[in-house]
Image (cartoon, rainbow, N blue to C red; front, top):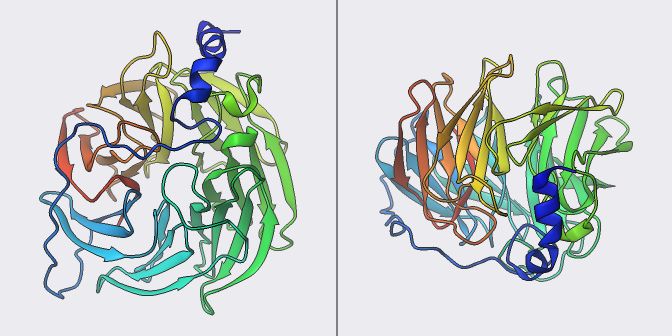
Length: 368
């Protein structure tokens, strides 16, 4: 067992009463940070390419953000929006506590909301609220897949027909599906179960699920453990990359279920993961969870495994890359205490950073 694992498990009694991505509780307070962006509704002109779209997890909106100037406009979508995905047609699909909202990103309008067929309880806010979390779109644009959190139970993958905007199927998956991804050919969907230490691979045609344990530190501590999967990124060869604690990169081969572990160098609790067009992995370090942890950071890991670690000021959650792969946008929303209302912009070549104001607790992010 590593020093990190011993330290984390030894402090379990403290962890279980702390707000965080552990068992059950609330994490809805705001740390000192730059004031929230004041959004002035914009003129009805179409949204420019390269605009950022973020979910305001502490509110009921998504916010459009100019990557140079900050927040432009907000659109109401439903309570506590979490993940989002944008199709080639410009429609954004947003996982909220109430259902999946559909937003016309060119006109900045909410054009509907699709209720879940799974019972998730009342629409609430905070890390442990029921409702949609991870969300992904099939490459052909015909289906949206959303991971639905059912408090204190296993999660559900709901399949939405984008033409009819109705839920057509449901598949059981792991607990608290933080992230949902789709294979490059659209043949499989992957739901990362945070509280069950697993990834569920679901055949897109038959909806047959297969569960793979992904626990490079083991599963000791159960719901109280910090050492669980959060987000994944699908590589060109079909393997899933899941960063853990800045120390280990779990590489899951969904064809065999085998998990290889590669070393990482950031030594920080990691959440968001994204691949740039050239195969560079971006992994968000949220900051310390135990003694010896480094502060928040962005790991820039090239395809050959070489890493650079860029320090970030304060906790962060998710990340998106610009279309040219030269810039990363890291959200300050964070699922635990310490979030702030903005985005850190990272030049991936120089490592230079600066902050942009955004909506309230920006969490999920996409580049339009």
